[in-house]
Length: 76
Image 1 (cartoon, one colour):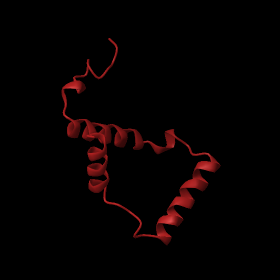
Image 2 (spheres, helix red, strand yellow):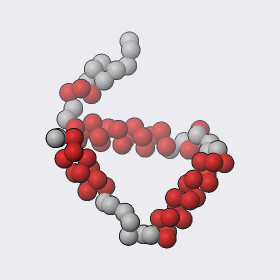
Image 3 (cartoon, helix red, strand yellow):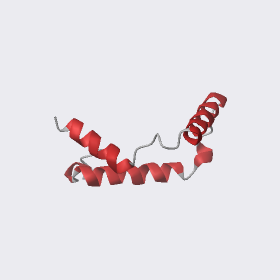
Image 4 (cartoon, one colour):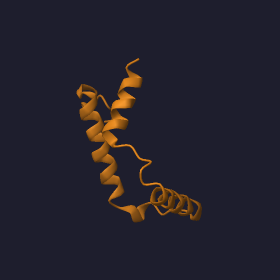
């Protein structure tokens, strides 16, 4: 049997449930970070982003605000 949105019943979930499922799946993948070694370029980019966040801590948006903004844009 092929795994798909339909065969798993994901197509019957509402948007909030689908997003929660995506987050849960992603978290389960990220548990084993050693399975995804970073290249030197990726590590440098992450270090750059952390330094930028440390330098400008107020330049962030809460996830709920981002989610609401995306939903509003997609509803147009």
